[in-house]
Image (cartoon, rainbow over all chains, first blue to last red; front, side, top):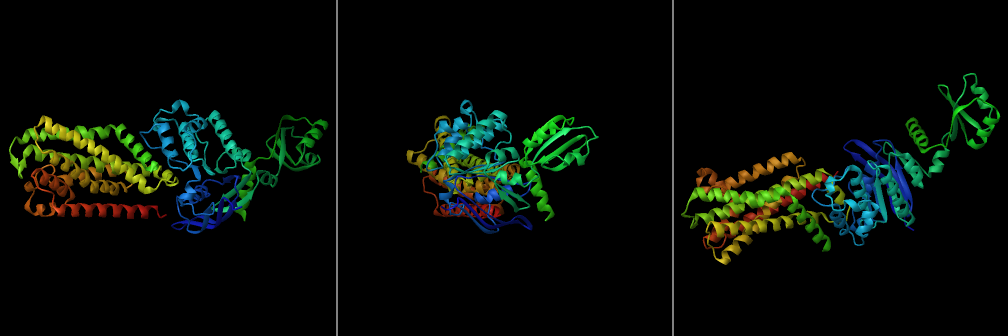
Length: 298
Length: 245
């Protein structure tokens, strides 16, 4: 089967600034891909090119095997963009209904109001909504045409915790229906929880592409940290089985190991005087920093 | 087709909800007409009754002012706010977006004309044959199209405040030049030579011809069509260049 998205040696230059360089990847139907990178890495530019909002300088971008600006493609995509101010003087339901008319097949108005939790505000003028409500309305608009491919560019900025929960529940259901979803976010734990593939870019170049688990494995791994008296030496801590690294942060020490379950048992048995123990799985945050640093060196 | 209809409906609702629409297309022309008509008394001008002549002049003035103002400011604003960017990724064709704006403005303009003509007929005693009422309405409506395209052209400047100033200034000057606020004969002689080429003069001239009992000059039709083509051509060229990044 053909991939939903194909990027082949895509370059984008704004006057003399190279924003995207030689970007190539393919995205299969039904995958949930997080596109991550530091600010100014070229994420929004890449998404804008995929949506046909701006043209690439060279290279090829295909969605469903066609160019992004074709109507056949637009009929099948939806997007929640950043910095879009909704037009004035229309109510929430009028705006959603207008978008429903743009697409050959559309989702029912009541469903769209429900997933964006805007039933109570349906008669309100869209312009007067709060920041979080506007984000939710953008979500409803992005789903209006029952898209097969959904772009979510920093979707949860400005949403409160309850809205976020409803939002991710809905997105999870969409994923189960086999929709392809592309996410960019600053909240790495969201990407970690939701995505089954992560593409990291920095300075317009692809730096790593893999599953969240793969990415996290390549970093130092899981860790246990605690406060211990200063008499305990680094050397002594290295003697515990499986410890790969010891890092001191003041009187707090952090031990890295692939098997933290075994390590915690050993530590307790050794009667070491530990206080305020914290066990943490390696997170995407660390993997992210690791790869960005690595890309800078090379 | 239902897509286009939905777009027109949305744009029309938006116009109705704006207080500015009511002010510029109903209140302002009505007040202007009363003031002008009171100060000019009775008599004949250009082969027609003065009240009738003024009614047509003010009707044209009101329509071009609201058309240019509304379209230019809306267009500039919606581009600045990223709204057109959002629409660009939907299947809605760009031409639908602009033509829906023009169609809704058309309906507002028609209502504004009918309202003003009723005021003229029932309060200022303007007398015209049914054919003249209808032909004047149709002429003024159609001859306002070049001004709508001018509005879109001005709206390609992306700074809303500047668009507001430029569109008001342009329309005031064009209305003065074209004899919509005072007869072209009051202008200096050298200026009159240029004034007859202005779209505002040709718009008014057609209506004044109709109330004087003859049909509009064919030349007026060509000049107005020419302006419409130039404005929309320029606007399309500028939009294409701005978007080719």
